[in-house]
Image 1 (spheres, rainbow, N blue to C red):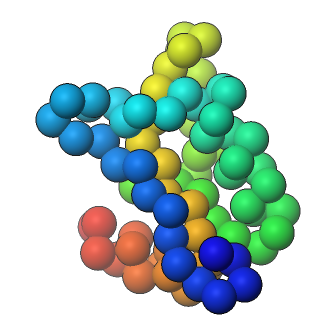
Image 2 (cartoon, rainbow, N blue to C red):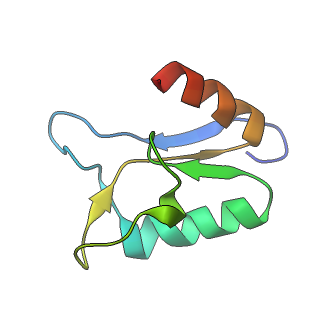
Length: 78
């Protein structure tokens, strides 16, 4: 994904207002690895790694991918 472009997304929907993946166990580790490799990770509004957890099992939407594709996604979401 980082080498050839593209995005992985797990957005919020009507059944899960906060997304499906847990911030501390799934989203933050993936985001860290992707950002170390040169990519970006966001929940659609802010970086995943800047979200302060309020609960242990807090869930969040996530979009991760190459910087160019993530810039296009951010423009689309705003």
